[in-house]
Image 1 (cartoon, each protein chain N blue to C red):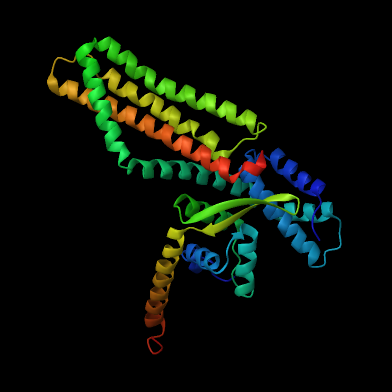
Image 2 (cartoon, each protein chain N blue to C red):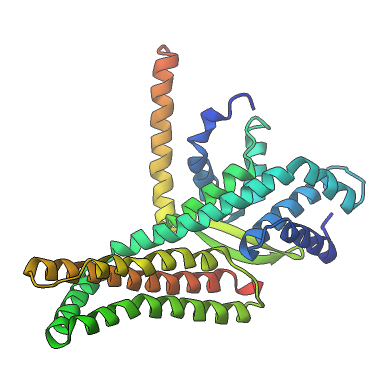
Length: 215
Length: 110
């Protein structure tokens, strides 16, 4: 016996009210719960859907909520794994070299304050870009929340702080070694932000491909 | 099942093997298939299954397809090309492990 659309909606709403807020995680859980209930009913449980659902939840709700946390950990791992994979891409050292050259030329032609300003704006632009893309994505997806897409904000926030470490260590740039350290560090920060932007685009596109039916 | 810890390390191989034999499978289907094949001896909980599936997906061994089935959306998992190659390696590793254990536990049969 297959569950009706209303039954499925009931399970979905129940899980959403139980703090399973991300649509992609809930989708997989709804299918699992519904399949198990259908299995029980096909195996001879003659009670109504609501009664079988109640029994299922008494037995499994604690595990389901635990699973929700596990799903979130998986989402974070997916982001970091994609990030590390992208770091191994030949484009990464290329981006780093281009950044180093760019910052060196900037330092040669402009004052240190101008260089600092340019560097401090980069992560802000990246983060603002992410927020803008996320808001547009949310509105297109009928305000449904997606785990990996939303949790991308954490590494963006973390990397947002990284250039400051190098900026705060550049009181005086009189020594050549200080200059190379600053340019090297700042370029590393910029490269990591750019890699994050690249993987965000990839993950957004991947979600778009996988979950187009959810919109 | 009496000692699920013994199976824990083989979960990934079990999933890959099942997906190698089927074009695509969804989470609940995998749990039921394992239960059926092991005559109820091994029950994979969703708490163990889904993180393992997501890990394999993140590693690029599995691909995902979402389809509308029976009034709901269903996430199907299938092996990628890398996943198919990795299945062969994992199964060889498991066979080697079983052979080693056999030699330890029952040297006459090894």
